[in-house]
Length: 400
Ligand SMILES: Cc1ncc(COP(=O)(O)O)c(C=O)c1O
Image (cartoon, rainbow, N blue to C red; front, side, top):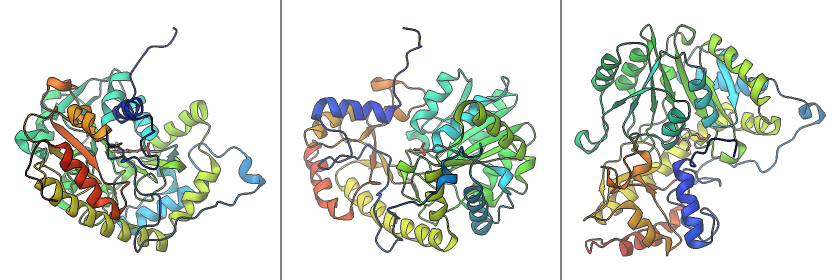
């Protein structure tokens, strides 16, 4: 074997276990994909339609430009300038095949001395990326003791402990906890990341899924070209098209040039039909409609599931964003034991240990924590979903 072995990203670990136990692929009809991070890919109540075709001609069969086709990077520029007064130009945008490759590219070319600072409970593949890239990192406590809500003071403490140049990485809203920084908190993060010699990857994959309405760090960035901030966006969640594999990084012109060079060496750009499709979704009137529909549908879902899961005896710590509930199972039931029971109903949650940036496994403090995804669930499946959860918990307290 010539290649170094490494395991799949955590969500996929659960998908493969599910497949072994049930013979089905999670997400197929008849399964209950509570472990998965995709939104509904059908029209939301009160939301815009999702186009079912994409038009292109022979010109679009040519290679795309390395950082993205012009109509899409213009649409992204206009989007951030319209909604957040971001003051960005097309030279500040690079297109990737989803959010994850954009995050990887932002980490890949960091100078060796730069240390990453990252919260203890975060998006599963951040761990894998840091490990694969052998990237030193300092962990900010995010656990039951602080209710998974570190403050900017904790970020400052982590930076002080490093002592040199740092790059913070944070999903906002956070996957898995849903904890979301808006307003002054977000401004403080931007100020923190704008200090000389420091930077941040601010991952806004769940930008639309915010109880208070969509928000972006770009609202608080004065001049992106004067920073080492990388804002990650994607059509995956809010625009409801994970299959289009389209994401982007907004960063300084100099950093986008690096991504252009990277693309020319390793990626060759991103499929033109996908980019044409996503450009259509970003038309300002349509995207405003989509933002409103996502907020109202998913706020309702978040609230309903919050109440029912709490009644089931799951101790939730979920914040105001995302499409997950994050909580601790009752008694001494572990997330993996819970999944064994759920598999019998063709259901599964994501075990919280996969969001532990220390990866302490089943003996660690995340062993009883779960991430329950309501992203892909139709509203009408609510009662059945809660009944299954209730029957798989030992607790007799649930009264869904
Ligand atoms: C925090 C976070 N960032 C980025 C992404 C981007 O995903 P993709 O590569 O599918 O666009 C996801 C998807 O699960 C996510 O949860």
